Amino acid sequence: MYGFHFLVWFFCVRGIKDTQCGFKLFTREAALKTFSSLHVERWAFDVELLYIAQCFKIPIAEVAVNWTEIEGSKLVPFWSWLQMGRDLIAIRLRYITGAWKLHSPHKTD
Image (cartoon, rainbow, N blue to C red; front, side, top):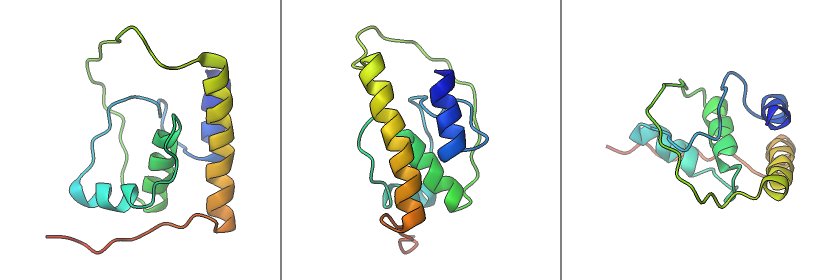
């Protein structure tokens, strides 16, 4: 996992230790801004979500929560890590080249 965390830091998200934590909390405005620009639908979607939040300068904080791990993960370590690594590179390159763009939806009441 150290290699994956390095790739996350190098290509996409700085300042967050655990991008793959399953618990994320957003304000309505932040959710509208971030989820409307999301492209990745696999394991690395968390990283793109945080990348988008940082691009929009949305404050991010890691807060400890009580978490219970449940047996039966669908993650296949080698292939999932390979796919996530590919997704990280794709996230960075597609935003830099303009293939993916950030959407700024209108503010709602």
